[in-house]
Image 1 (tube, helix red, strand yellow):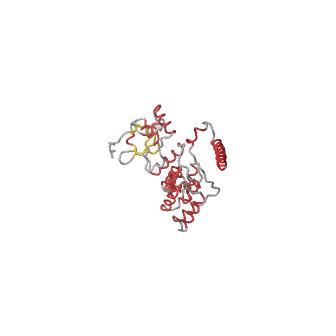
Image 2: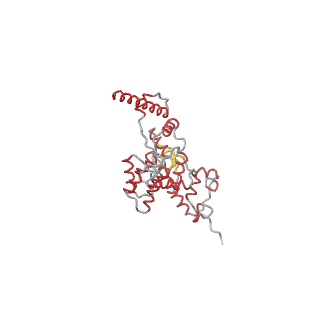
Image 3: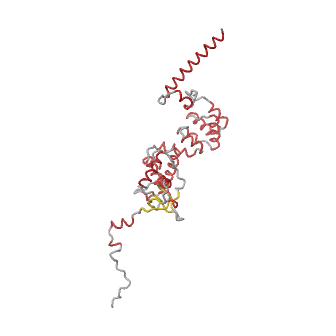
Amino acid sequence: MPREKLTNIKIPSLDDDIFVSDEKKAIDTAEKIIQVPLDKIDDFKNHPFHVREDAEMLDLIDSVARIGVLSPVIIRPKSDGRYEMVAGHRRKFACLKNEKNTIPCQIKNLNDDEATIIMVDTNLRQRQNILPSEKAFAYRMLMDAMKRQGQRNDLTSDPVGPKFRANEELSKKVKDSTTQIKRFIRLTYLNDELLDYVDDNKIALRPAVEISYLTQEEQSILLLYMERNDCTPSHDQAIRMRKLHDTDQLNELSIKNIMDEEKPNQVEKFKISKKRIERFFSPKTSAKEIENEIEKALEFYQRHKNRIKNKDAR
């Protein structure tokens, strides 16, 4: 029986994949760096880190003006044809300040959890000054992403199973302990005004954590008292308010009674603006020396008043 002729059979050319070197394949499939218009890049959704025009940013703006963006930002494509910034919000801001139209980008196809992990990780490693609120929301986002990834067995060679602990994995990536990570995440339950107190170093982390367990209404009552009386709760006061909250006994009166108490070792302080007295001292005079001089001046003034008083009594 005669053989049927072979037709429509494609003979691979030298350009086909089977003849292409591994090196060329790697180059062809590598993520390329391209210039993307700045107005096509949106910020990361719920980005926890602020872009502040501080000294560090001014240095970056100057650097971009002189030598451009040396390290490309990371973006991911969106369904509407635009892009979402994953890592590089500060570099984008510096480019805008320099009136640049494009920025070098590395485009990555990332799901939400992958993008979140990269976004938080790069900011924690690259930023020098991070506010407690920034770290709080970043840790919370990263923990949630890591927990969802921990439910997938294809991420590691061994099944993760119920022993997966996101906070333990996170503590290996950052400088904070698992306990400290939990404390920071609790800050996300504070209202915005109280969180500002923490960022401004007016409330320490430990009392802020205790306050975070109060309801939003209870936090608002406490905040109103703090604003009216220009004070903040100590750690002990915050603990007692939380205990009353746990037993449904915390109200406006109990908050007032706790906050009205004199704190342990509390000494009332009198403040005077340095600007009002700086003309009496040289610029290099220390605060302690100024305090001593004021005390001596008041003693002299008091003796002077007593002499006048005794003279008038004669």
